[in-house]
Length: 406
Image (cartoon, rainbow, N blue to C red; front, side, top):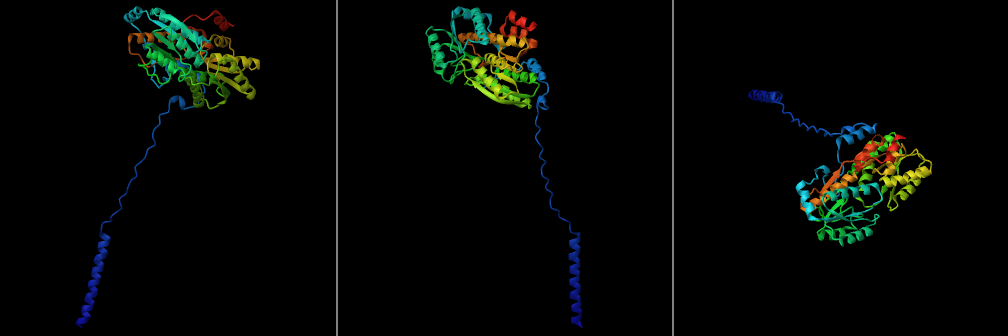
């Protein structure tokens, strides 16, 4: 009997334990796995320049902006930030000090066969005269480094206080210019600097036009006059020459970045010294190979004259030509509504004046900026006469004034 009760009591205890376990499981708090929120990664906001947000349809907008903003695009040969030529000045007291030195100067050019070179020389000559500096020599090397080295040697025999020059080849002529610097000659360079020379130690400064900016302007002018589409050719200067390389790169970059319907189908380099003849041959080859060519860009005005000659010979006067440098022959063609429709102009007379003033800095021991640049100037038929006066600081010649009236 007692064994029976014990059995039932044991079963009852087991049931109680089971019930308690079930109640505990049901009422126990639910432990949820923590929810790990992944951080939201936002796309970076890229600022897009306003002009790049849409396909360019009117190059005139860009050309107007270039004139309005007065921006210098170029940096110096070693990446120097440009200083405005307007900041390069001499006080009356400094001018008097320079005049009292009875200093002498020589100009060692790479090439004199262009209106640009002649304007450079005119600007330097005029400013040296104001400073009481005697100009003892003006040489030209025909773009030959060997000839320029010989010119430097000849000039050094005259014992000048100043040499202003544009190096034909930054490597080949460097030892000759270093010799001049070591002799105490104050060196001012146009556009480029001989290899290994240090500003403030070996030379005073380097002065240049905004060659990159002029390449930009000439590209927008090309787009404007071929209607924003079509095939074009490019004739560039095939040499280690800093400023002509800047023009070439700027032209190509501007076309590629803004005018996707313009295709550069041919690029031919020229080395000179017959730049007009070389460019004529290059243009002829382009026009034969591409009978649908709409435009040709030439690296400066003398090669552009060769392009004009080739196009006339082949009866392709419909071709659009843009270039850099406001020479008389291309200016007349622009005025007459010819093949040269526009160009980017340098300011060579003002550049020459600035170089002479910086030479005065060297004589005085005055600290000079490393790189001085002058604004570019887009030119077409609408402003050709005004541009001539700005570039050369003289009234336009009668032949140009007559051409615009035709």
